Image (cartoon, rainbow, N blue to C red; front, side, top):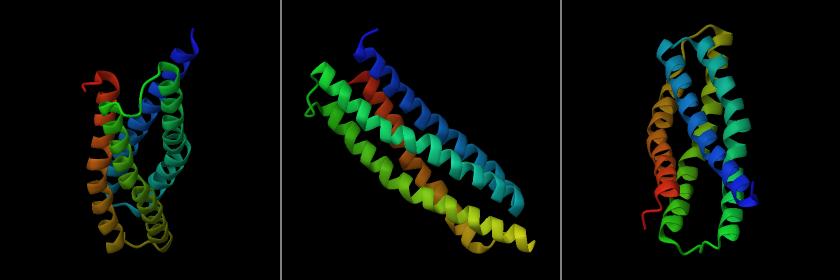
Amino acid sequence: MTLYFLVKFFHVLGAIVILGTGTGIAFFMLMAHRTQDAEFVARTASVVVIADAIFTLSAVVLQPVSGGVLMMLSATSITERWLLASLALYAIAGLFWVPVVFMQIEMRDLARKAADQRTALPERYFVLFRRWFAFGFPGFGATMLILWLMVAKPF
């Protein structure tokens, strides 16, 4: 196995982790939210915050590092149009993902407080959830487009 293929494996693995964790987090948060059970939402959001910190963050850091190494090993120019588009989409995904992390933390904290006080989820939680849900589409869509560009290199 060459160094190039080893790095490429970790680069693809990072993409899988980002997409898989993002999909899983979205699914579990949506399912917990639908119950409107503050205790269940708090437990689910706690796990989601941990998963984002461990899996998504590590993959997000790995991607540009492994991508840069792949560029060097393959003599790919930073001016390749598919690569420039991928980098722009990566920045867009990040602009939507970073706020989502803070929304998840606040939703978790609001749900914990409601569960501790045995009250319904507050309106602020629902405002954050709607925003979190809306931010998911461009963030996840950008990562899907990046994956397509990585594979197809259409231009």
